Figure 1 (cartoon, rainbow over the protein chains, first blue to last red):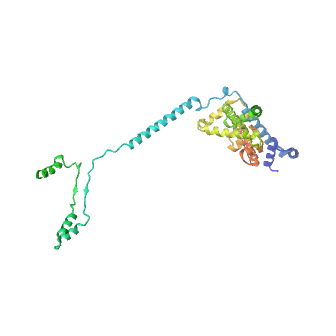
Figure 2: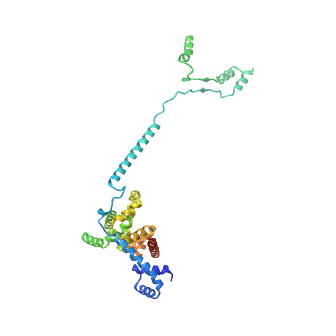
Amino acid sequence: MERDIIERLAMDHALGELDTDTAALFEAYLAEHGEVRCWAQAMTETCVRTRKAIGQKTQPVDGKRHVPRLRGLGPDAIAWRTWGRRAAVVLVCLGLGIVAGRWSRPQIATPRTVVIRTESTSAPSDWRQVLSRPDQGFWESKAVAMLQTRSEETPRAHTGQRNLWDRYRQPKKEWRYE
Amino acid sequence: MAQRLEREFRRFWEQTRERVRAYMFCACSNATDADDLAQECFLRALRNWDCFDGKGTRQAWLFAIARNTQVDWFRKRGREARLVASDEVTRLRETSEPVAEDVEAIWKAIGHLGPEYQEAIHLRFAADLSYAEIAALLGVPVGTVRSRLHRGLKAVRERIEEQDHGT
């Protein structure tokens, strides 16, 4: 038989997992084969030593006297970790609050130049052609006059180039003639 | 009814407490934690005493609870357990009980095995469960348990022989 099989049988025998008939057969086989007996004895001895080692090691002892306190597991360390975690949570919340507050601040209207550009719906060449025609009537010319709108840029406030006097000078001139 | 339960549980506790504690010690290598784990295991067993469905033996059922208790404990203490350096664990094992060099060598050799081999050895030698009980507990065939035990013990023997030849 192979060594592995012998060792397994020896282990089963040492651990009491073989029934009586099989155990008797195995013992008889070992009695006849010296070399095989050595293999079996080695495994049996390992089982016995392992059982003894585990038994000795795990038997109850006065733990308080022999067992040192584990590093990082004492009550002080746990308290520090707890407070550290709380402080970290507070800091994270504070940071989130600052960021959210910064983003949600209402925007201040910044002065901007608004350029209003009005364009005629019809191309300039159209009304010029209409005006140049000699047979145009009164209403035609009025309609064309309505169509032709001034294309100019109207600067509004905050341009920075007109002072207060320039802005109100034209209305004052107009009021004079009203 | 309550008295019957108490009597029954007490008898069971007296029969199994040393083995449960030994099994817990194998996992945590600390006498205090082993006591706590064993206590937790028996509390769970008492709470679920009537939940035993009769499949397998009562002690196999108890060691299934013990195994779950270990798993929960490692999950709960995982972070703290990682803080403990391996040399400190070795020192802890060395100082937990004055033991012979031979015992220490075997203990260390078991510690070097893979987790499945360690578990099989702990369940067989500390919990004193049979192959069939271990197989039911781990959810593997009996042949697998046998194989794991054989390989584990073989590795232990080889390591000890190496140490003996080295010294």
